[in-house]
Image 1 (cartoon, rainbow, N blue to C red):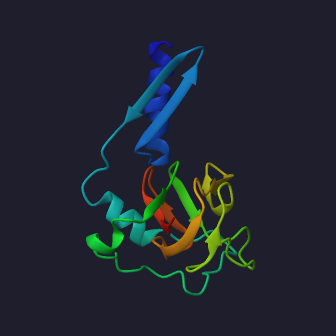
Image 2 (cartoon, rainbow, N blue to C red):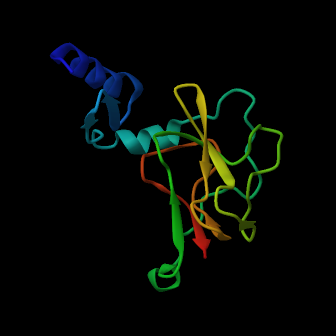
Length: 151
């Protein structure tokens, strides 16, 4: 990987407001990461609007985090990439999962849109959805908790 390619990756970070980009080619892996400017993440989250035609899904509001003691036995499904979180495959469709639903390993629980691509997020283990931690059509960061599961 040459200097020009690294510069292009850095430009992608700025251009799309990403905090991390990773590329692997011919056995060489490069990861560039930057800290968001102070207040930028807060403004972006507050100013983010759902795409045209996207409707909020009832019951998808922000939830108070559970206490640490109650959360100790729960498993987290995290965002595998930066993008926009959607609970359903289409604005008028039912959510993939709701609180209280039982999920199986490999079951799709949401989608994350990144660079106009829809990426399905699957449960890594079977369990019951205890909490949905993100509102529909909100931006998410890599590694951000999306769901809490009770195994």
